[in-house]
Length: 565
Image 1 (cartoon, rainbow, N blue to C red):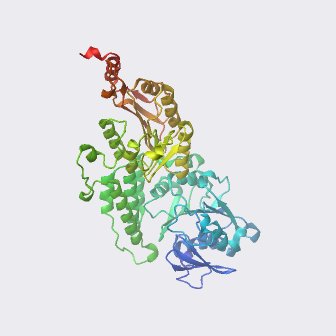
Image 2: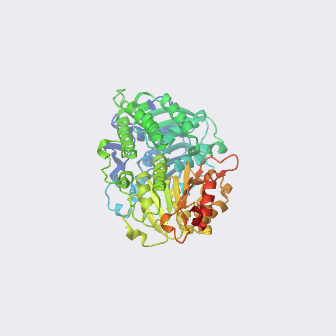
Image 3: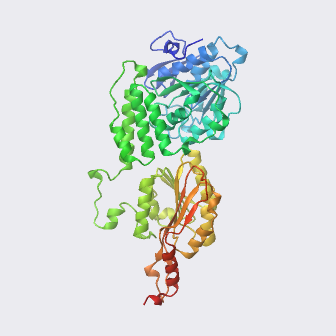
């Protein structure tokens, strides 16, 4: 029986420390390895350190007893899977007939978004590195169940898991999948969980998750690369694992991050500070994020290389600083706008020609977007791209929907935007599904398309079919227009349990001056707003018309403007 609290169970297998190690790899350069196969050496890449790979080999060889399966989530080119398989083959505690098909290897196996890291090969032009995975694991495929595809479209079932290697929790939804489907299958007192991205700024939800479930795990070690190792100590109920951690209140997420930082050692705590800074930034707390990142110490604090995260702290801090800088494009003198008109000053690089919004509506959108900083955004109704060009710099990704194919010819589409030409009844559900597949929450929707009563109702109802993963704002333009207003009023807002507030007069509408003719005027403009929260509300949503009297007066006067003389 090996002692998981003492590092010698795995350090004895690190090839550069012990050249006689039976581990199937040796390190040629940073993230580059050679693997021993029956056909000779195969060169392959991995984002794990030699330490982390040796831990996987040791756990499979000396710790695994066959009481549960081995799951490798996010195996990339497959070196992690090969280390596990080689360990299973050499394991003397499990009968040979009980070893077959016990390692489940999950990955998209796609080069997409990893072009900067992909190694060249004869088959990579196809966009997949599954061929390389099969090549590096060819000798041991009898132990492996390859599971290529989208993890969110897969399942696990009820088999117990003895070793769970997680390198796929790259977004809140993926993190939730792993927790909800696999954590309840861990064996108390036996199962080991390896959280490969624990020591990194991007996936801060991993530290939040392990602190949220702290009563069910014993921390074992934190090892250079980015791994945190944990022993499952208690059975995790299905209902507890089913809770979506992304819906935790902001202050609770911050508290759990602070808890993780307090438990970490030396430079590991500095890495987790960068993760907390990224959390603060994502919550819109930019000043707090800046203050925290400025406090991160990146100097070397320990001599043991497998304990020293100073280099990771330095690179993570630099990345978060860049994120903060991009979130504040006007924060430095060098980016101060040069403008000759107030419009150029307030709306730099925005398409203002044929933008059917008044200045106060434009400023309201600017304020909403600058505070919200949406990760995912949907715009229904594009026209000449005014609001799209305003929104794009504030959003990570935006899908804009219109039925007019001429839209694409009117302006240059922002790099982070997609224009979909199809009816909203088809496109809106697909857009939400698109963001779900990417693991990106939708935080912002602008509805400014069909202004008929039924058209407005339809577009809003399509949005209300979505269940937000994070706080979300829905803006509806022309809420002062009688037909648009009636459509908003007739919507059954209460049917979505996440709707907290609807205000038809977030920005009131008005009689448009150039529409006045023959003592009659047309009422347009105005922004209604709806606030949706990931936690279901306890009572009925608040529906208000904060400028109801003013709008009623405008509606009355617009029919006969002679009463104003």
